Length: 276
Image 1 (cartoon, one colour):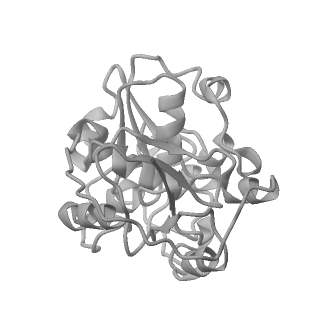
Image 2 (cartoon, rainbow, N blue to C red):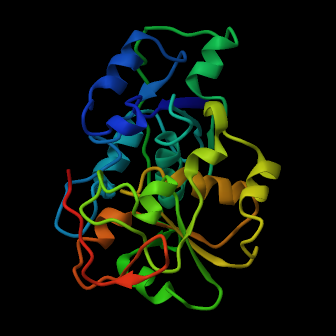
Image 3 (cartoon, rainbow, N blue to C red):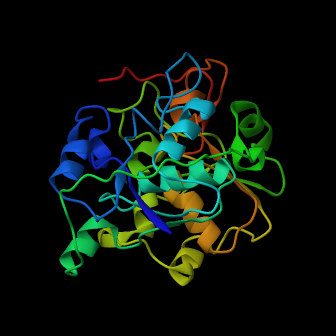
């Protein structure tokens, strides 16, 4: 049985400014049988001081939503969006975190499916409810303490999935503080899905070829969403010890004591840029 889930269709730059765009797009047309999951309402929990902009949803409540969507232990899940996998990968990772292994990403996304002439519909799905029992895999998750101890530790690699100008601190328009976590390397997530098509193992291996295969990898972005395509890409490339720092940069900069590195590698504990 295949259940296709639709992540939010809001553009990557409009997570918060157009929260209803994804649902409107889904209601207009979607893959037959698909059900809709929204980034803010379903895949994220309440914001607090130190959890970042898109913390994990309450797991028991989310498990009930999954069950209501027709997802049980044996359900094969295919996730898709129309944003290069940026949001669908968040659902992919969350299902993996909850112990559901039978989940894949539709590499070409919704536009690729539709443009290839595959069927679409505006008919809303009415799935048969199932019991979803979470089996949390904490090995997939990193918190701020683990990130702190990973800085400079042999065998540990931090990957920043944001666009280069945010990583270097040149673009100061989006975050309360500019820069990146000291020691992190930049691998912009969109490089793994040029033209909106998620690339296969060979291309993903080339993106991370300078990172040892046995490294302990922690991936972050701005708020724990666009890091997940890099987590998926690393899995495709054969890396087995990969964690998502869900709080990501928005959580890191909420601690005044956390160090920040700029594009030139200098580290500051107090560098701040007013959010515009």
